[in-house]
Image (cartoon, rainbow, N blue to C red; front, side, top):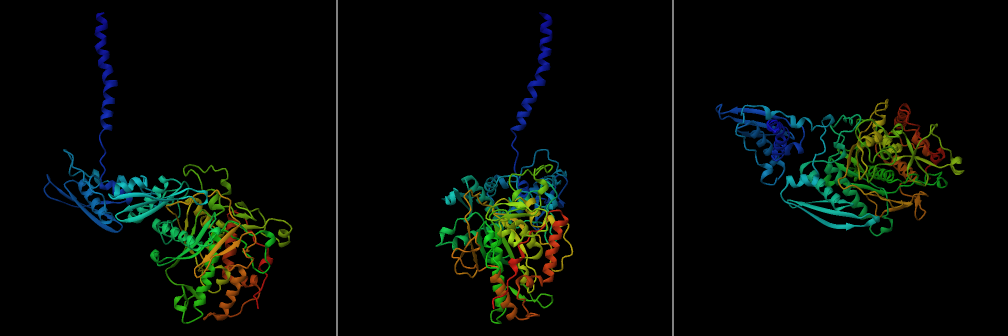
Length: 612
């Protein structure tokens, strides 16, 4: 009994410190609140900032520190009895310069602890920033959700559910957030997602904070840096403006013909001068997802072969470019044109400096940019079952949706083969956009008159995967492209996703598409399967229509070195040597990368002449 009593206290002394004390300490630590200060807030808005000690004054026992931080090229100062407090004050000064913050705890400087070492450099280390810089210095997506961040930054935040749109069997919610009397809209399939979209729009406009997927580093090689810019991303506020303008113009031109508002893919092109988005113009709007049926091919360029929305929008842009060159034919209207006489180049005309074109598509273009886009994990080794097909040239199928890889062939389709039942194949939109980024969007005919014109940016309404989109539109040939005749070059457009993502539309795609170009009094509706208008007429954006416009320009445009126009459409295109050289180099680059051969339409389609 005595032996038991002697051991018992020892066991209790052994057990208590081992099992009872540590949990109490741990629980105590967890209860200590982590104060939030202006430095942390500024780091969320502007990553990679460096704080510098400018001066230290006062006696040793009561020093006064002055610390600076540079934000967007502007230096802000802060003072305090410790380096930490001075740093917090500098951050607060910077924050107040561009955001009207809520009062109280968010901007309250931390009180110095009792035994603070005023001379320590601990708080001057920029460790907090080291993990916030993405590859190549690009910013990361903020760690917090947009709604939470908005509530932290602003005091007067009010969300309101404006209306519910049930169009096209897709229930859509619209949320409006009001901040300091400014309103920002967001839409989504749920109120939560609509609220997130509105918050993202507000943060992009008021704080230049982007939640774009372009901001996040990708799993493989980082997005290459363009020669002229440190980022491939178009600013979020510009992307949202482009998307909004195209959607608004679509709703405007479809009025009175709502029966043709049904669509899966919507595209448009917006023009800016000197990146002034307040005066941006919508040049074209289009819808469509189908290609012409082989039996309706035309021997005189009278049908639209490809009625995919982004391809149609680019053809509408061609119509606009012809109209702008028409203005140069009359001295009284020449000043209104976006083109100017080119006195120091081989091309008679060129775009005015500062004119940019921006393409909007409500989804990733079909082909290489779209098939890999959804639900991919951006970490680790590429294990996608179809990874060997990444970058492959792909074709659309006659009368259908979707794309298939091109077969290894000499890239020739025959007229009689198609008429006997062989499916007419058309290169995918991803491949065509890649082509535009080499030869320009002006086409071969205009290439004998103007310098190449390139897209400045591509904005998507959904399915933007930075790695796949970049590869599809320019990345897959950047290492193998060579020998382009100047000023032809590999164009790398800015990329962006709108904050209010376009919903996935499960409705069956219609067999028609609409097109509208600035200057048109009404929209045109085209039967995608016949390539003609629903009334059976020749569309205003066909090869035939453009060849006639080209013939007029060659006769009437001042400053043309030659007035001769070949009667044959195909031969006229072949005569534009630099364009053809750039195009052949593009095809060779795809072959060198083992990505397939460009599939051409039957040559009979281009063997037609000008109407006398």
